[in-house]
Length: 182
Image (tube, rainbow, N blue to C red; front, side, top):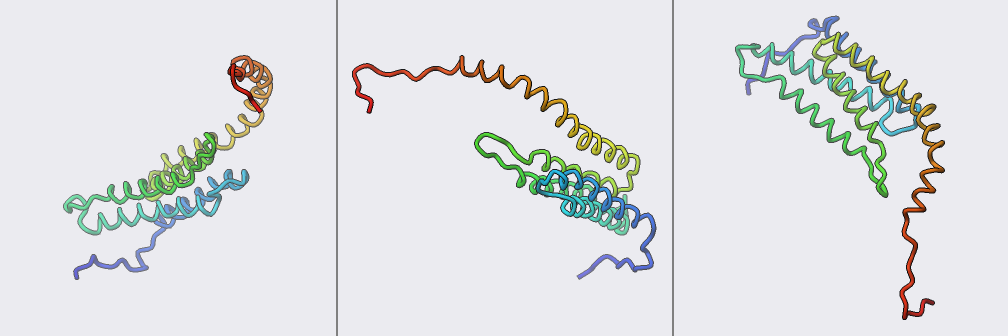
């Protein structure tokens, strides 16, 4: 069997460590929101997913360049695509539909986001990583606060009116003539 030449430990460099450690730290930070809300897929899950995505990306890119880069017919994007697809399967498994109510959809999207940020960390796309992390924090934390304080109050104020309208539109049960109802 012919294998690619091994990479020695002396090849461990600061760039690779920065890519992997930033993915681990950002994944943990992304999981804090889910952890504080006592939702599935908390800090450890997000940290592992983000780190794993970065790890796969770094490994795919390193193998690509080790095998000849542009001169080879290896496509590192297939590995990244597989990572993203697999995470989609994990995220879909988090979604629960119960009596018409969808639960954990935000957590599933959050897991997907952790994967994408991990891929960007692994690829060393630092401006993309920074922008993605900032947008994630804004959307998950600040919009969460907005939802709790503003939207819930708005919904609570509208709720009594909605219930009256719902009762008016609900047809009353009709009794059929000619039958004895016990």
